[in-house]
Length: 221
Image (cartoon, rainbow, N blue to C red; front, side, top):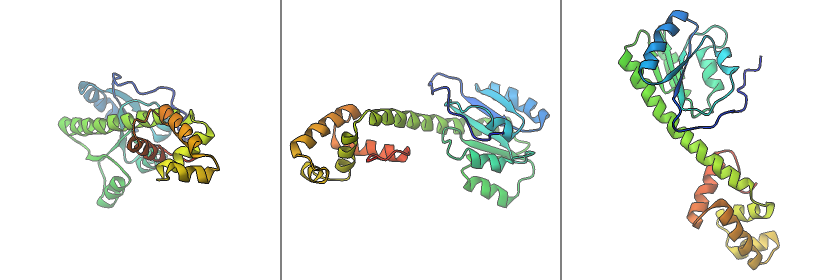
């Protein structure tokens, strides 16, 4: 079984109902959590194992993971490692028998919260609400970076070279010297690049380049 998420088939829409993925092999626990989650205005998706969750296609939706620590097969911590880079999906652990070292390990691994069963409805709702705020923020950032990546991909090879050198602090004359082109040609490429990137200033271009690097794309690639 392929335990990696497939490519996203849906894009983020601000008005979509947020999803709470409950990963718990205890059917009774899932049955108890489902109406509680619905009462908070979220859409519950009940899943019995980490493997079942990982087999689903990745969706760019606001949401969070509510995961039982002790799962058969892949454990909750195993699942956490596999979704670590999914910033749009904060993870909340829940367990009846969590010791301090395990809790610390989960939190250091990036868990948003750790709940001890049984927990009150208000505790659950507060934890999910906080996780949703983080999910929305991450999705806004991912959407922004995706738009920047599309603009960057529209640049010609030379325009990318110019952009990489410009944001590193080179002057037009220095850029021309490194690329073996005239300063006038550099200015022409720079103007086209700025328009395609929709940057209104050099400072904004530098910020865009930093966002692209953070999104895994080098601005001088």
